[in-house]
Amino acid sequence: MKEQQIIDWIVTRLQGVTVANGYQTDAGLDVGLGRATRDDGYHYVIAADDVEPESQQGNRVKATMEVVIEGYAPADLGNPSIEGRKVLADAERAIFTGLDNRLPLKDIGASLAWGGNSLDYRKDGSDIEICTVTVRATFTKDLTNP
Image 1 (cartoon, one colour):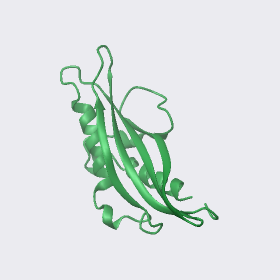
Image 2 (cartoon, rainbow, N blue to C red):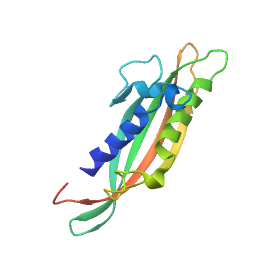
Image 3 (cartoon, helix red, strand yellow):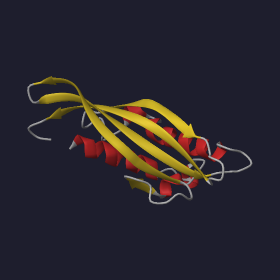
Image 4 (tube, rainbow, N blue to C red):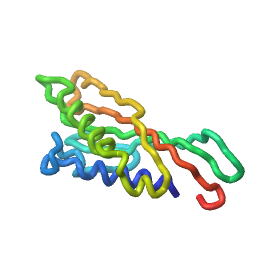
């Protein structure tokens, strides 16, 4: 279950996002899977993870999993997008800093790549900013031992 190992690794990295650890926000204090259950405060949600095959030889498939991380921040009405950009930057820093030496990703033969990001500008009347970071994980999967 390399997919779950990769998700677990990303969740663990995001949980380290705290001001005490040198980040700009405490979004890592609340990391969830699936859909956001609230729309206040700083937090992250792993919103999607889709796996697509790239090539296959027998039972071995080279696959890419696209993981979408949503970050939430309270909107600063006087300075739109400032807090959302902080949450976005913190997520990217947590995941991609020192990536070449990351275990257990190396142990399972997975590599990560940045897949882009976005920031939804605060809609009038909304008090929350939402950003997304996309991470692409490439790995080989044995279909006889998923």
